[in-house]
Length: 183
Image 1: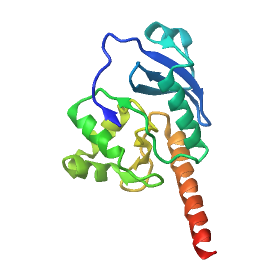
Image 2 (image 1 turned 45 degrees about the horizontal axis):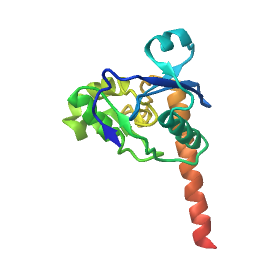
Image 3 (image 1 turned 30 degrees about the horizontal axis):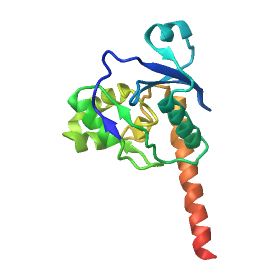
Image 4 (image 1 turned 45 degrees about the vertical axis):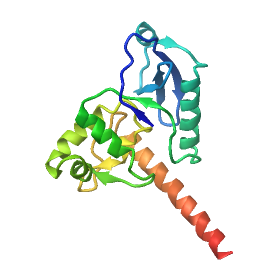
């Protein structure tokens, strides 16, 4: 679910989530998830100047639960209300990213064709870079047309990990389904 509003004059909360790839900082207001940050070095005082820590915030707890399930191969889709702020083009790109099936990839150029022309691949890359909720909006599924990974806000090794995780989960589910059909 996407909501393209902003959170002005509201209290913003954060929660730390120690994912298998890196520490993630989850950020929400009272109505929706706003941001996910990859943090190699986390400066708590920096975050507490802007946000209020709340380990029991329902949206943050639910986000953590769904991410936990994702990293364990139990979840292929997220159903967290996300509130995004960006340009019309960024919002268009982020909406297309949500449509990329779990376990698959598409090129920057492929997304560009869907949002206004194949010559906008670089602009798609920039919109991906500005994605405030990576993993939930799966910008890691977008790669270069030559098959190389391109960039990722959490770093290319994490992008590779996420793509491989999804392929393993997808192949495992397909394998299980094929076994069930033959018995």
